[in-house]
Image (cartoon, rainbow, N blue to C red):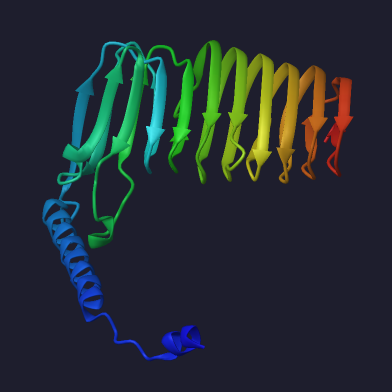
Length: 262
């Protein structure tokens, strides 16, 4: 009985504990506000007038793109990077080169403070070997890129590519979380592709002699193949092949199928 009486007696609120919680919340709120104000002070409030900056480089074989840019890759004898953006934005666009790898990023803060426009980056290189999409950028080739081997990695969401290429061996790999739009023109002897989820590949103006395609995508893949093709389909996305190559291996694990001669 004494136990129940003891626990039924109204207890006084611990005002000290409540006050401590209030103080912690106020301190946290003021600290967050101070950090926000300081960040706003450091961030440019406008893009500034359009400016162009040329950055020299010794060698570029690999291009890794973070953030959100319009990037053009040009095959040329002179290696350099040209940045076009507002004068307040150019200093915070990084084009770091380590070995033969170019990493493009944007350290801009508080973009909601101003009208954001994609900076334009033009990369000049004699031979390109790899492209890594790690941001929602758009990459184009004003001319045609040529070489022995090209690897195209699409790792982040909402990437766009419109590439004209002529390589001996081309590899294309998209990540399992990617929703992207990839367009290919040109040709190769060998083409190996792994397409995932919502990645859309339109390469009807591209021709490979021999192709191997694995698709986990819900979107359709369009490709030109001349001699032979291997196709593994794990989702509802179809493969439409321009030309009538020999299908030397086909495996279907879902609704998707392969159609030739379109």
